[in-house]
Image (cartoon, rainbow, N blue to C red; front, top):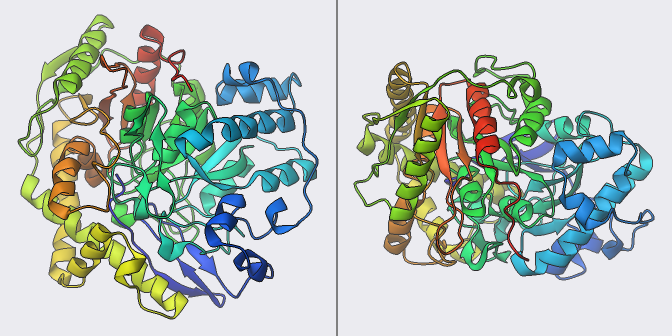
Length: 543
């Protein structure tokens, strides 16, 4: 869950650059784009879903490139991102054929799951027509999350009607790195308003459904990304995580999700970290090797970076293939808030512990002694204030005050509460993150990894975590979504969810591993070992 939004208003070269998010980066708009009038002459929802781009698209009457014949879906779905790149490199398929296969699959299944909310199909086609992609993942279709990452000339809404026509005036550093690595961006995936919950439901975009059971949530806030990967639209997709927003959707949708260490991936060009360090950006993938390959093209400091984790691997793609040494693993399966962990989640983590032991690792019950009250205060103070700042900056850009009608009820409540907070509360909140980091570092001096459930309950039904309900009801559900995930956002440690268990209802339930700060390599090595011992790639929902 990405619990809120932070924004800073900076006048850079005369442009108002607005950053929303625990996921960070900035929405930007200098003056009206030349085609804005065209965009606003049609209903906004129609415009957004028709392309969300102010530089290309048939919906705006602009020229488009010719469509290639799609790669047969069976051939497309059989490959992960690394495999698709290899097909293209060997000239067994063209990048255009692969892109059209992704688009065809999106058009076939997206009406059922509502994963992609902004289509940039013609931007992708025109990019391929102009220049063949280069890099290790050249030609692989790619989706950005509609939150906290910016593609110049296109809209990023953050899942909020208040940002429904916010056009980016620049590319995020990650976008530049993704393109340099060869990824072909053709759309954006759904997120809840400001990433404030562990489901992907919003007034703006509606419900994103879990491909394994359409009545259940795909998770949040990267639920659109997870649904798109699980449904076979893409083998991997961009995602972000401020409290569990990569790992929770990965768990709910039977996928692999790695939250990187604080500072591993960039948030720029106009920010150096997400939401005071809580939020990071990476990906949700089907295969472990895809996560490693994407990390290779995205990792590294940028101008202004001050939190730089230890170098884990110059090449994760090569490094993760080595088997890990015998690991000391702490098994933590008690709810941080004293609630009951669902039997299915306990079963998942217990089976994972036995699998680890069968691979030669040592597992024993142990849990860090965390400052729970301090942590709760910190999350409320930091996320609420971040959301308030994002709203205030948007108000300045629009020249009007936000109203209750602009936001979902829980977010409206949150900004009212945030406006009353003192500077001391914010300082104490940030200080609490350091305290959690110290506790976890000391604990991980005795253990290599911490094993826990990813969530305390199986994937909830749609509506249970909605931001459009009474606050007390929402909070009870939210306490079961991220009791094991958010702690590692606070400490800045890497953590992953691995899809090793499905319950009797056929719903995936992930298990989480967390490691030392900067040590993604050990996590990826163990994940590859688990993937080989208990393969999950062939498990696909029927859509």
